[in-house]
Image 1 (cartoon, rainbow over the protein chains, first blue to last red):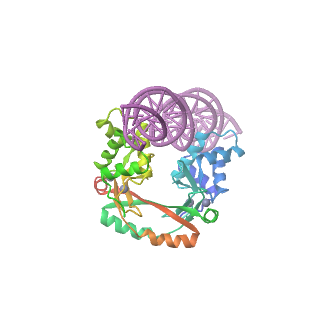
Image 2 (image 1 turned 180 degrees about the vertical axis):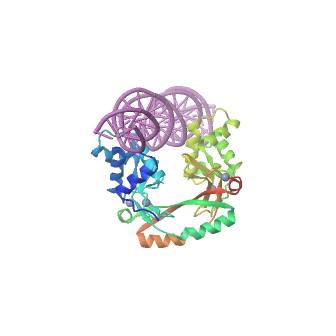
Image 3 (image 1 turned 90 degrees about the horizontal axis):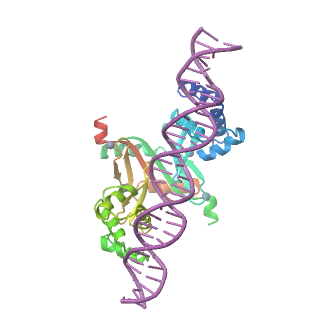
Length: 149
Length: 149
DNA sequence: TCCATATTTGCTATTATATGTCAAATGCTG
DNA sequence: CAGCATTTGACATATAATAGCAAATATGGA
Ligand SMILES: [Zn+2]
Ligand SMILES: [Zn+2]
Ligand SMILES: [Zn+2]
Ligand SMILES: [Zn+2]
């Protein structure tokens, strides 16, 4: 029974975790709501929120992203480009989606797949390893880049 | 038709790529041959090689690892702990193995699976994405840590 | 509504991994 | 063995992220 992640619900989620709802956190939240399809780095978020609030500090952005990831609002990804990238997490993602990363333009597309779950069962038994999470990435060339190669 | 990766063969491989076979590179190579089962970071390699050659510099280690990865002797991995980890690459690994990473002790075990290849075909067609590489990691708890939790 | 206080912010300094610079040292080819 | 391009090691630099701290502020209770 998961709430839909509207702006107001997330503010309440913050309060429920005894985090304060500050203007900075609201601005950052709005930024993600306006870019649900993106995978933003902290620096990129910083640039975007400065338009709405030029006073905001970079450390605040990092801290806010940490908190939003901790309470399940954002997902923190590592696409191998040396910085963490955050995205708005959909509701009901008990096993999150995976990513296709273009080696040329850096574009990130997505796909869902439940196949990994059956593989997890096999691995747990064969390797005596209790799996709690997985991370699958495909590197290659997106349609646009493949054409103009 | 791939050569078996002995010390001598790798030295020749260096020469074939017009890289010089220096004592430092030999020491680093030996270190990996003595730890074929490990996934070493640059800093760890640095510590190990200093026993045999205390004069060696950290930058040299980084540069050597880069070169050895470039010519296919080492594999460079990212296990999400903030540093790259290198391992001796087996011969005939057209599609490399995957990793089970313990969230408690950091131990890395491995498993092979060709099962992703069929998934790649599906993804290529469905998402118009030309896959050239993939990266699959499982996070969880190894047998030892699971017992003493 | 206003106050008290613990949280949060923004600035700066710091950490950690990795790379760039460059003179001195050194493998390699002839 | 000589000549030279490559490589080394020391140091400086780059970049992402975190830590420390005084000033500002959101929030629950009076
Ligand atoms: Zn692309
Ligand atoms: Zn995504
Ligand atoms: Zn463990
Ligand atoms: Zn491995």
